[in-house]
Amino acid sequence: MSALPASEVAVLSKQKETGYRRTQAPPWLLPALAPVVGLAAFLAVWALIAKQGGRIPDPAAVWDAALKIFADPFYSKGPNDQGIGWNVLSSLKRVGIGFGLAALVGIPLGFAIGRFRFLSGMAAPIIALLKPVSPLAWLPIGLLLFKAANPAAIYVIFICSLWPMIVNTAVGVRQIPQDYLNVARVLNLSEWKVFTRILFPAVLPYMITGVRLSIGVAWLVIVAAEMLTGGVGIGFWVWDEWNNLKVEHIIIAIFTIGIVGLALEQGLVLFARRFAYAS
Amino acid sequence: MPPEKFLSVEGLNMAFGSAVVLAGIHLAVRRGEFVSLIGHSGCGKSTLLNVVAGLLKPSSGTVVLAGRHVDGPGPDRGVVFQNHSLLPWLTCFGNVYLAVERVFPDKRKERTHAALDLVGLSHAEHKYPHQISGGMKQRVGIARALAIEPKMLLLDEPFGALDALTRATLQDELMRIVGQTGATVLMVTHDVDEAVMLSDRVVMMTNGPAARIGEILEVDLPRPRNRLALAHDAKFMELRAAVLEFLYDKQVRRKAA
Image (tube, rainbow over all chains, first blue to last red; front, top):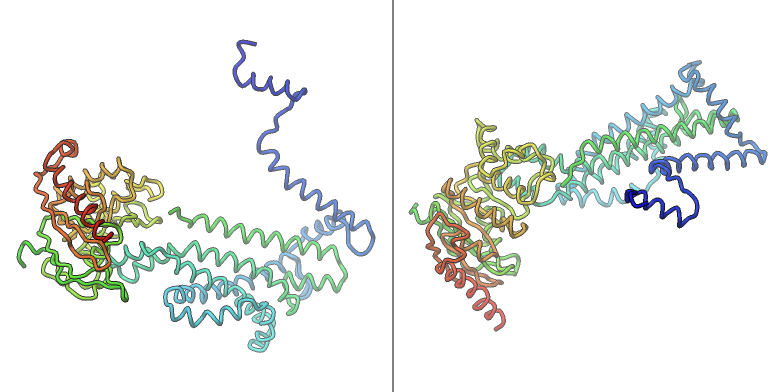
């Protein structure tokens, strides 16, 4: 006993305390196990609800249906019957266009509002009034303006992505420490240098936060907008399958929407990390 | 321009709204002179420096540097801020280069390397500000100010945020650099030892509001100065006592009265 290293002595004394040998789990195991347990519990609750009868299919039935759907995601039998891949891609395309236009307008506008107090005062009541409005309320206006479903859906995405981008960029500009601007002033840097070397890098993390919020909202809204406008798209697909009473497909759509949304968000988090700076 | 008036501050008043900060400041600095501004906090010494830097416009009065009227900030004055003010998304090299490329059309990289070498930071050129210590950050700040070869160096409590040992090292470095470059310096400080050890003259300011220059102390200690030798130097002690007396006797009593 006298020659034992300290660590083993500690183990032995622990054994004596508890009376039985505890095998220590590796430290990564528990954190890795938690989501698995969570998902299993989720599936169990779902299966239980499905067992009560009614129209909710159980997880196995949905899995079977999913295997069939994802076996050929890119088929096309006319405009109203296309694979889930095409539906997701057309939704992503609408989000991409609406979101891109919102960035083109919102980020410069955010810079201007953050930089000039008067513009900020001008914009504040409008933004405060319109930001809490559900983006779908804009859909009739879009239909009226564009007289077609597709641009109206893009327009709704544009509107809902716009506010977070303006607000976050403006906050970022206002948060720039005076010290950095003093550096620009004592060196008498040109407006272009001030923008590229000081304003833009200082605001970038805020801008990316705005972009992340926007894309989250845009992905939420596109599903609802497509339900109303029709055409090809994941939202329309959900509605179509509801009319066909294929509840398995609706559940598949819910998971697909969730996974795509998660991927968009995570992609932007990685992107943001690339441009974060430690002060 | 008379040589004793390389920098000339005349009849300077500064008020923010109804609060008068500086009243009737007259100050002349010779070329190559090191002048410290010392006073209790809130006495407006930093305000005076910011006026010379051109960051603040005086309510009245003039500032003339090397025969030219100061009417705003410019690269003829190198400013070192208390909190280093390095841009966190640029490396040490990038921070100094930003200043160099503003001023010089050629040999920008060489000049940047030389400035960083002067403050002993060649080895940390490619590090970002968050990767280096507070003392090193302030050295980069000094390199950035010196790299543009300004007519005058303005230091706003440059070592105030550093620990005592680092501060002493940087003071010695600054003395060496100023000796090497012959820079004209105006430094704001609240550290009596620092003021006496580094300066040719110590300008003591009265308490605000409406602060003015109370006394000016000539520091006729020979250069180069050595920290350890000065610690036992009777003349240094005497000068130091004079500043302390001004700050803690005359000014505190005036405040109490």
